[in-house]
Every structure is written in structure tokens, then in C-alpha cells.
Picture 1 (cartoon, one colour):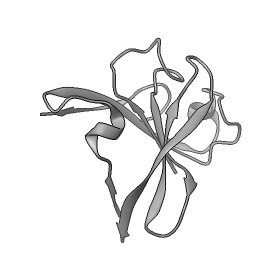
Picture 2: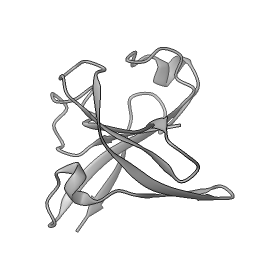
Picture 3: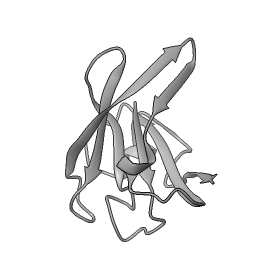
Picture 4: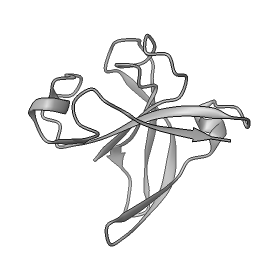
Length: 114
């Protein structure tokens, strides 16, 4: 399961606006990858850190330091999407055609942090 993050509220940067992806490369049962998009409108990612996570039942908790996401300590808006079982990396239509995504299609969840 992948978590895509748009941390700059700019949909012309990143892949479909997503600046980061989490969990493309699981390291262990307690650690996974955090990767940054390094080419706008392209599915090219560079690992920037391993981050901790914990699972219990149907709950997942990720520990992502703000500084790794390059977001300020003040108020910030993050759009995000979960995607599972993507068949073809870098193809936006997989959000609709294959696997599962939440929210569906090209919609995003929004978190406002302060």
C-alpha cells in the first residue's frame, strides 16, 4: 500500500502533484521508505530516508518528521492519497482501473496541520 503526499499544494510539481511517496520499498516490519519526486510529471523517486511505522489490527501509524517533508512548523495543508495494488507504476488511470485507492479516482484527502 502506497501513501502519496502533496506537501506544497502545487499540482504542477511532483507526479500528479505528489511530492512524496511512502512505502514503495518496505525495509522491515517496523521500517519503510520515504521517497521524494525528483522530476515533475514523471514517476521518478529518490529515497530520502527510512521511517518507522507500527501496525496493530486495522490501524497503521507512521512517524514522519516534518523536516523530511520540507514543511514549516506553522500551519500547513497536505493532500494525500492511499493506493494499493497499482499494476503499472506511473499510470494515473490505475487509481481508477486497478487495485484500490482512497479516496477513489483523482480525488485526495486533505489534512490541515498546525
